[in-house]
Length: 133
Image (cartoon, rainbow, N blue to C red; front, top):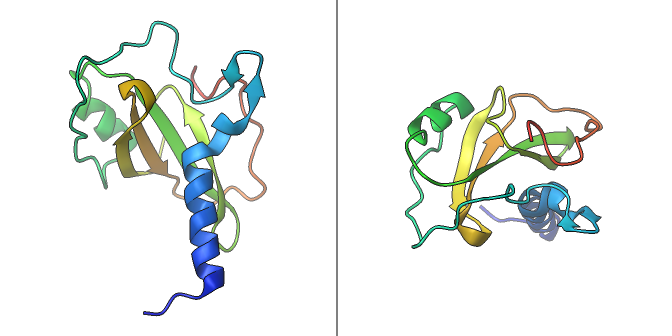
């Protein structure tokens, strides 16, 4: 399947927005959202990322319950068609959606990206430090 330059540009923009999301906002202490919580554990070694793809946030949280790693949940939803969206920072598992990916972020924090089940046209107001923080 051939991908046009426009489709490639949209995919790249989506990937950048997904990774950066609310962390692009700044205050006098650095990025406002998606920052590790105070007292976050620093892992002694790089950890393997568990396979969570396709799980609900609740199932992923249960699978990680005994794991001693800080988790940053990223809740991605489309805001405008086609393929324009936003990635919110959550300190608790979001209430719905499906795990799209899990990766290790800065300092060993586990980043779990959730795809929302429905678009949120125009987005919505964001808490200063992230949802559930």
